[in-house]
Structures are given as structure tokens and as C-alpha cells.
Length: 398
Image (cartoon, rainbow, N blue to C red; front, side, top):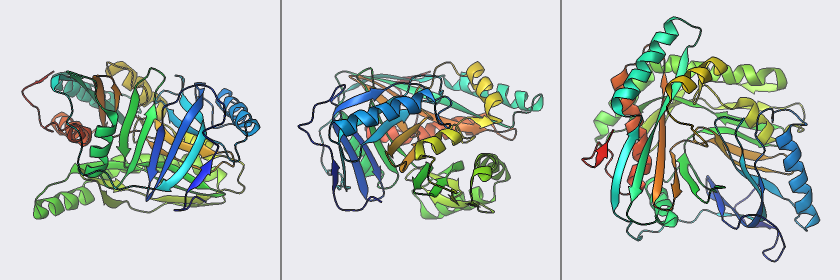
């Protein structure tokens, strides 16, 4: 079990191959830092819930190489995309360190001037996609689909990732902060509120979120919004689809599975969420955290229900590939312990180009205007880290 004391595996002097960028993952009061040359693993994660899959085989080989190079407890870190048929973005790093999470810097450098930003799709096209999904629900067995938007930003100069990261941490003191180097030279940066799976030995926890409402700076209005969400039939229905899907995927393989009868409320800086903390125990510890995560991914919280039909609908109405957005990010050690979170409240940074991502769960009772407002609110987490307004500024075009 990781503790607040520093745990360092590997050595900066060891030889290795691959990239030299740094991966970081913050959970609670600890932060995992992985650095040094990394062995890159890009095998797709399709089928990785089962032993013998190409991804698990690639990971096993990389971990064995790390042991031969002298690492005492190597691990795999990184991200897996929404579409598990696409390449993974995983690494076995040379040096791994758990350390106390440092307080974010109170001052930082200014960011470059924003030249342009736009929503993809624009407001009108997104609302039409919501309407299309609702009509589809009435003529198929699809009950939920998660539709998303991108906010594309262009800056006058290259963006300093460390500045954005410090701002994001200062503005969001809770949540799972992550920074993942990408194969194209860019960086995936974000702060997820949603735990897909945490496993240690035979014990595991999953904490899905579905159903949300905007926070308010005014205390009375904020509490009224929370009370509204707690009573919302539409949001409870959306949440139940996620919880029941996770229950169905886990219950046949567990010696114990505890699922709350009703969700509770949790909050981030921007949103109230319906939350269910699911706890369980496996009959043995042979399944790794990564295998469990792949068994759950993608949940109806980021895809829909039923999964395959919802995925087909998403492919039809979304005008872009999601890539790592709504995938999962985290770590898994050689003993199978690990932690994976859902890749939301995030963006990719590549020199002066930035793409931010947000999505909303659509059910038959959804209203296009409300869903558009929800994705704009969710974009606000990353927009604030770039020092940008969270409404629709004059420089934005759809």
C-alpha cells in the first residue's frame, strides 16, 4: 500500500528507451511522478480484461525488461482511449516516486495571447445531435448516449504546460490531477472527479458519477441547485443506468459487492454530481486493476446504454474522434494494484494549440438547451486554468 512517505523505484542512472517526458497522477494527498526514459506501449486495449490479450502481453514484456534493468517494483502508467481499438498511450517508466502532494504555486507566469477559439460542434449542431439522440431513443433500445464537444484554442505562442497545471491545481484542490505525455509530443492535462477503479490486493472501489448541476457562488442558490439535483428524476434515471451496468459487469466475479441503494451528492469547484461509491472484494488477487478497469470501460457515464448501441450512435452524430477523452488514465503495478480514473475535465496541449473536452449524458427527458449549457459549464474547469471566461466570449465562433 502506498503511504505518505517517499517510495522510489528505479534509478535515474539506469539505461532505458523511449520518451523522457514526465507523467504525474495525484490522488488524495499523494502524487505519483514517473520520469526518465520510458518504454512506450501502444497496443490497443480491446480485450484487455482477459489474460493473454495483446496489451497485457506487451505490458508483461515491458515489466520484465524493467526488472532486468534493476527496477524492484515497476509499473505501467498512462492513458487508454475511449475507443479501445485505437492505440493506447501507456509507459513503463524508469523511475517512479510517490511523494506528498505539494501545494500549488500562488504565482505563475502569464499565458500567451489567445488568438481564436471555437466549439466543435457549434451550438446549433450540438443541439441537433441531442434531438437526434432523443428521437433514436424512441425507436431503439438505446436509453442513454453521452455526446461531447471540443473547444479548440489557438494562442500566439507556445503554452507553458507547468503554468496551466499550477493554475488547475490552485483552482481545483480536490480531484485526480493528471499529466500524460502523448506520442505526438503533446500533453494530456486534467483533473478528473470520477474514479473508475482503485484496487489493492482483493479489495476494490469504483465511484461513478452521472447527473450534475452547476454550482453557484451564492450559498442559498448553490444549496437550492444541490436539492434540485437530489430530487431530479431525470438525473437519477441517468445515474441508475451507470450503476446497474457496473453492477452487472462485476457481480458475477466478486465474493462481495456493495452497491448503494441511492446516490449521494458530491461537489467539485464547478458542479454538483450524483455519486455512488461501489465497494467489492475479489475471490483472489489475480485480476489486476488494469484488467478490472478495462472490464468496466467505457461505462454509461461516458458512453451510454446499452454500450455498443450507444457507441454506434456516438460515431454517427459526433464530428470528431475523441482520442483519450472519456478514456481512462492511471497506473498499475506489477502486483496488480492500481488506480484508474475517467479522463474528463481535461485537454490536450501541443505547442500553441489546445483542445478542451466536455460531454453530457443524454436521455429521453433531456432538453437540448440544458445539455449545451452543461457542456459549457464543464468546459469551464479547463478554461479557468487558461485564464479565459467561461461564458461565450466575443472571440469565440461556432
